[in-house]
Amino acid sequence: MNKERLQKILAKAGIASRRACEKIIEEGRVRVNGSVAKIGDSATAEDVITVDGKRIKPEKPVTLALNKPKGYVTTVKEKHGMRTVMELIPVKERVYPIGRLDKDTQGLLLFTNDGNLANKLMHPRYGVEKTYVAKLDKQLQKKEKKKLKEGILVEGRKVKARVRAENNIATITIHEGRKHIVKRLFAKIGYKVKNLKRIAIGPIKLKNLPLGKTRRLTEQEIKSLLAD
Image (tube, rainbow, N blue to C red):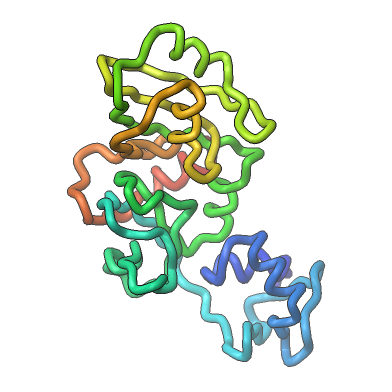
């Protein structure tokens, strides 16, 4: 039986992303055959692996696309009585959101129980493209589009964007995932975002997915995400 790094096994079982699983191991919450595990340990499918005393059961990988409506927060646990995106997820598998969308932002949000896929999409070094449609408070000028293309400094790091615009509607593609990054970019050049919708994550497009509904990604789509 082939051995595999423990954090990879946990991630595949849908516990969390691989990086988050490493932290769980470091906190001493994981045991293998009764012994507390440590970073660097490996295991096989025949080993008894527990997290917080509960034995993990490998789940079939599932990845969903949601057309998130406004008014929902991107969190797994209920937060101050607010509606969460998990209320919109109709599957029995334990999935979690990959990244986030602000409460007042709608559009494409992915969910998975595949920790390796989550890590690929969230880790900054992979620079997965995300595309948004933003309604601005005024028409976007050519000189401002040029500034976005050349890059704008946000908290000490330059962020470059591809932008197409017609009147006050801008389609913007970035490789960033920092909080409020689209709104902050436009604010830097004197614009306010009145409405924001994410329409693509890498090769995955929102297309005509109804608001508040989900669909399962195909095997080919998942392969394209991992290869992107």
